[in-house]
Length: 204
Image 1 (cartoon, one colour):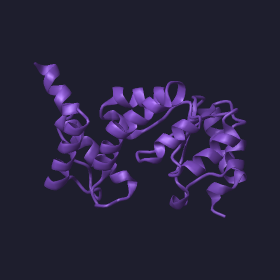
Image 2 (cartoon, one colour):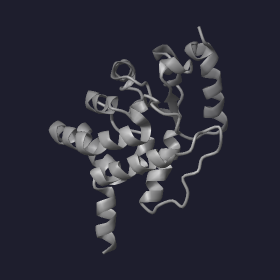
Image 3 (tube, one colour):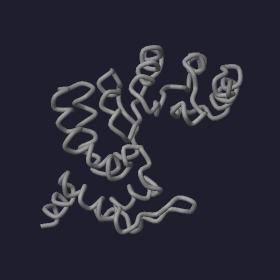
């Protein structure tokens, strides 16, 4: 087993942070394919620490999210974390909230999505998801399918440049910056979800 799967290897690291830093911690769960994911027994031990309050459950699949949520939600906040279509299933499974990088682009609509999915109306959440979230997740994160070598973080920054919120979309190598084709794809997505149109209207 990889060390991240062994409670006796992981717990002392967080125990030291708990004692020496003394601030609330959200533990990031990566997808299993990364080789850096924690098991339910590991999280069960970490939940014993007073400052471990939540998991950013970037599991990559609804099934793995559900496994964590079902085992741990009464002890930790199991936050949905996915910049791809599985996000809706995670939210509807019972997530108390989400930690998603893509939400810096059109934050209010992401907030609306999370609210409707967690405490509101599932049908309304589906509508927001399909009309707003899906086009942005496709253009910026390529549904996490890595169709091109372009960094999703560069693409997210490019969207913010087009919205007038950042001056540059540049990312440090070896991350790959956006090209003309990706820039246009992002522009089309921003128009499709109404963000560029809304920005123009706000400036009138």
